[in-house]
Image 1 (spheres, rainbow, N blue to C red):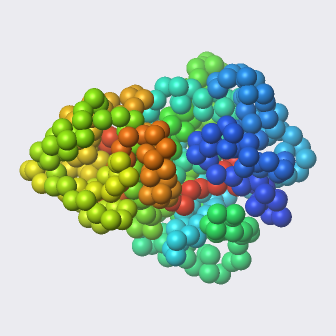
Image 2: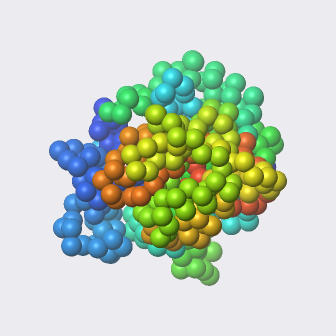
Image 3: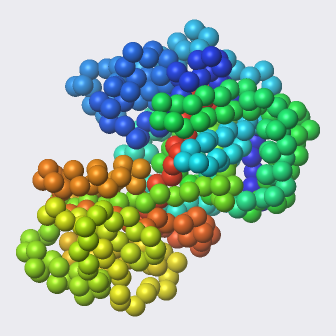
Length: 413
């Protein structure tokens, strides 16, 4: 059983939606976000990454950042950039890119479902990143960035959404500067809303976090803080629910999440290759390697590309058999000394959307010594890990296209 809730979303006016909508705050550095929002006072980055409007000497986590986020959000609402829907609705959000579409339901998920484990996850979170979004949520009194969730595909639910989108014009539709199409439909029919909610209750086994583990944990942290403050009052606040977009698993695609390492752990090139050869075959090739099957990897160093294939005994465990786990357990840890990729500053990660050229540049300029390209984790692997209550290595999945922030806001105060 999965619980979803309709709500009165705060949404940008249709003619401003394209200017408001912004990529998630965490895909940018401060300077990148400042450049992305340059000349656009409507960009939601002024709320979601409010430090872009403050001096550079204001450090990350400073209370002034969150105060500024609240001021910007309130100003945009007061200036009628946003308006709140009069009645509680569900929403359809469709993204079109790379020759395919994915269509999800925008709703509120329950904090209690996350706390009791009904909402399934596959990543660990870091406390400093949790604190940042917890402080942002509490300062704004709102959830400003939706959690990217998935469910095992349900034919009845797909049929309902397909009929609704075919029979109604989108309430909002635009193509962003990166070529990704975004379309929104408002489901305001109370009977249709009840039908969709019932399907989730009766037919959907669980909600799975695809992308947004830190934002989910932060929404729950914010609820816990407010719950404790309200103790004894008998009040159960709207903060007990958080913003989500739920897509069927068979419409999603995971891209590779590649690795770069700063040095060879003190090894000479000959020793490094000898150590790799204990578990992998090594073939020098003339072009960048984008792996085409499990247990195949690309490696770039000293201006050359190599194709690696794992040749040792294949691991049997759900997590151990992931390509990211094999590279970590058989090469990054034992050969390069990356024991904990969550905390080791010698390793960096790059989503496959950046391409092999980005990896080459990082190595060629001397910033990194070696780069590895990965075969993407599959949706079936993600669901299996989550169902088993397991945790993937960090940076195992990169989803494209990204949801845009600012199209839906859940304000709870």
